[in-house]
Amino acid sequence: MTKQGLKIATIGGGSSYTPELIEGFIKRYEELPVRELWLVDIPEGKEKLEIVGALAKRMVKKAGLPIQIFLTMDRRQALRDADFVTTQFRVGLLEARAKDERIPLKYGVLGQETNGPGGLFKGLRTIPVILDICSEMEQMCPNAWLINFTNPAGMVTEAVLRYSSIKKVVGLCNVPIGMEMGVSKLLDVDHSRVSISFAGLNHMVYGLDVFVDGISVKEKLIEMITGADSSPSVQNIVALGWEPQFLKALNVLPCPYHQYYYKTRDMVEKEIKNAETVGTRAEVVKELEAQLFELYRDPELMIKPPQLEKRGGAYYSDAAVRLISSIYNDKRDIQPVNTVNNGAISSLPADSAVEISAVITKDGPKPIAVGDLPIAVRGLVQQIKSFERVAAEAAVTGDYQTALLAMTINPLVASDRIGKQILDEMLIAHRNDLPQFYPSSLR
Image (cartoon, rainbow, N blue to C red):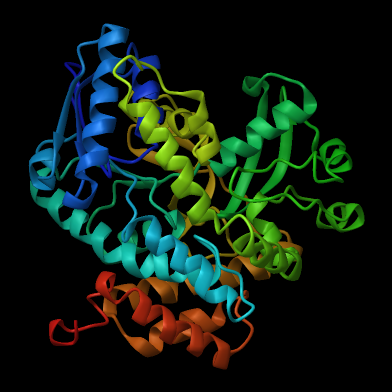
């Protein structure tokens, strides 16, 4: 990296999230001098890439910044000599997500993008692609940082650490920053005054303590979070509210995704009802994206439209660009990221990926040690880490039995029999995106 300007490659550049990223680079240009931004996509995403790319160029032109934006289907060209590579792609597009959500619901099991069977299959589809990208990075930009926003971010980071030689990888999620924003809104204080001590896994992270101006407000906050309207939430999860006595006993701040584990039956019933009425989240998002891309087409539009926040990607640019800037500038500030545990959470293997508050340096994140997780949450986190590890192995090997094991040890799957039925149906539904399970002669 030189101070003369950075080359950044974004895989999945045709995503509806990309204007968030562009806005982030524009806002932080003085501290993060991006020279070239390469937006990469696949042929199926060409039209979206061209629409988003044209908007990105208009945004940069309006800002008067010398950022060159390139659109390409050639991943290797985009990766050549890149300083940072960001990933935000979806294998199988939203159609695959809709299958992940609908098929498990037929069996009375949660259908969701990153949890349960849906999370397993998103990992099975995504991990081989991310490992291909890592292999190309080793050749084209061996010194680059990989900043992964592709879900399931924890499992993907785990796979990169375990099955590639890329060690300069950081997984990122907007849930922790969304929780910080939710807390600041709830307490009516500026976000800059709030800090949360995060520890756990992606979409399974807890706020062990919450501070305003360095003073703990956790107990006050838990008192406040007693109803559906007051709990920090995210766009793609309907908050059902917590039992006050349960939350006080838990004595840590859960993330919105914990509702799937602590309120499983309620959430399954809610998802079934939604699927029968408004549609699954993937189907809702498909409509939202169609509206967004109509907005993006407007040649007069030169900013990120506010409607994008309904998509669920709020604060993405804040999180992603803040992280890149902190690495580039060796800021040594504290941010929640997915990185190698290295003993910070003693309840989990040292070589595993965890989501944790870390000091961000030019050499990457240095996780802040928290010791053992509280006994009340330790077992669930360990169970999900076992699931992630086995799922990553299944994604790499294409082994049916390993995939069945991953499916069945997930706490959201009721039995091995139901797990096998879901696995078999989803393997058929996704066969075009699972080459490791299907030799070419069977496809």
